[in-house]
Picture 1 (cartoon, rainbow, N blue to C red):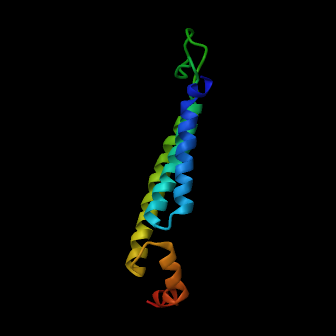
Picture 2 (picture 1 turned 90 degrees about the vertical axis):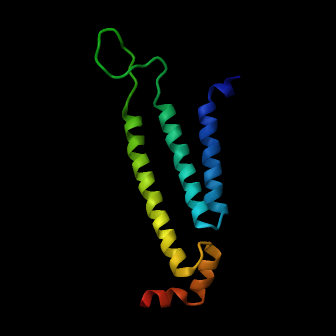
Picture 3 (picture 1 turned 90 degrees about the horizontal axis):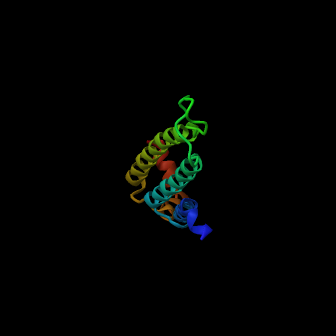
Length: 125
């Protein structure tokens, strides 16, 4: 039953595995971005759950409480979420540009077009 007490770790591992699989195995760029977001969410979940101290309170100095939770992991994850959303937005913008230039968002088709010299013509304009 000790395995069930660490459900948050298993959820983070499952999300990370699904996200990593999507990034590695898929050729569609939008699916890769979704996988990257899942992987980042797994890291966020892992850091947030490890930052919680059982029985700890907010770090407000008071004579009643002696066990405090550290707020630093939560603050760092808030910053990481903002960076994650920004990275996703830039990735989607690049995907739109690639779709406009190449007509596809599949990696194999883009590499085939580059091998035929599509990249040289696009760079001249």
